[in-house]
Length: 420
Ligand SMILES: NC(=O)c1ccc[n+]([C@@H]2O[C@H](COP(=O)([O-])OP(=O)(O)OC[C@H]3O[C@@H](n4cnc5c(N)ncnc54)[C@H](OP(=O)(O)O)[C@@H]3O)[C@@H](O)[C@H]2O)c1
Image (cartoon, rainbow, N blue to C red):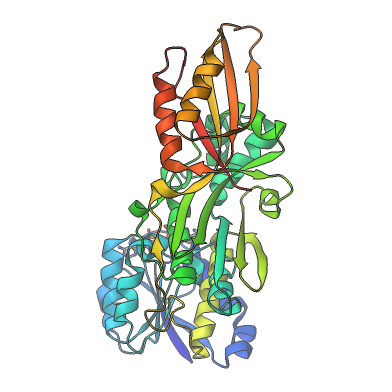
């Protein structure tokens, strides 16, 4: 029998208890042992809950117990939780967690304190999709050329709705909040930070890159307008918030931002709250993973899979590499090269186009296509849309600053990166 303590019996924790209870027979058949939750830890004991295990609010006493084999951390939080998890690992006990925020900052610190213990974190990326297993085990024969993922269901729901139903970002966000798909404070999701945490975890496994969220390019979806949606439709693109990591020689570019993705690409078809991840290996080619990226049951499914692995005594290095393993480094944000789309609202007057083209030329940006949309009622202004060939991020940022200074430009120009 494997005895576990569940630190945090909220949305995911209570689903873990339910799975261990309802699927006890199949879980025992798969790992040869019964997995039994002895105790759960919560903050507020007076809350009504639908779980059948003893509960306490005294986490210290639970960590001090000698009869627990595995601790399941489902409280959330970063620094305080990191100290608790570190203390447990120091004692040689294994931990399973879904806590991507803690791992985004401390995955390498935690790896260092693993003695005979194991750390499972399948649930920290893309909920129920076994993406860490795929990357760490299934594709271990390959150099990973690229990871492209829709890693945040809230953003994907909002963007899908904006593409299909023409709502503004604000209106669709409000609707998502009413349906429970977005938090009351949505910044963490719509700002791209949640997706970035997950991309950092995947990139450690694929490339051995020890980067923190502040080291990589992160942009959210809050600036996407109905005009961007218009352009995307005109040119057969979908707009998706992508987490992208790509190996370029001895360096890896990592970024999270809204992307224009050709409609016929598989990832463009991942709609609503679902997650989808494309992993490209040098021998296997492209592989694609799809499923529920959040929710109590889907996330708990991944938590229990980690428990089964530990019960089986399956051995996989926590971050995929047995030794130092990787000599790759992170590419500076400014050096990333991709294709771009610009949206520029200007006074509708002679010479505007030539002046913008000049700025682009000086910034070494070559234009691939161009579209103009004039509003019939407000004909004093017009919106210009440009798609570029591949160019450097630093040049694009420079061009945007210069274009904003031009006297006929009415609002700050906006840009979306294109992912072919
Ligand atoms: N929900 C999802 O879909 C999802 C998906 C992927 C990953 N995750 C991750 O899974 C973790 C848990 O998420 P969740 O949605 O289950 O959160 P939740 O519903 O807010 O549950 C958190 C639980 O932890 C307890 N808790 C919080 N701080 C504590 C403390 N200092 N001491 C003792 N207990 C404490 C809470 O107690 P009370 O019940 O008394 O408040 C609650 O039972 C997070 O790291 C989250 O990022 C969640």
